[in-house]
Length: 103
Image (spheres, rainbow, N blue to C red):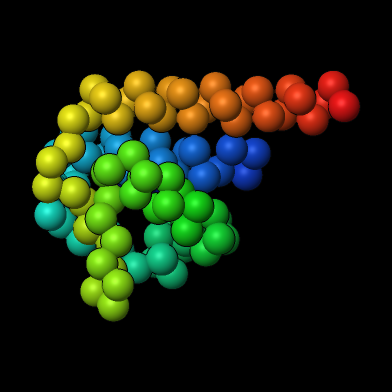
């Protein structure tokens, strides 16, 4: 279902893989996500990268964080809206890199 990600845009890659898993029916609304430690092993990234991805997914309304219970796929998801939001995140991240290189 998931694969290792490159380090340069790893949190965005994790976000994209989780959204793709939802779009392909591999993760269903209301389903729990694996724990952070397991996700970091699956994606071969640090737990901070996983936390950043989950935070982004939470802001997009894809993931619900339930304190003490874990992270769950939201019940009401519009994949096309989410997909556009992720494209915007990628654009913003690329713009940040360009700004840093120009400085």
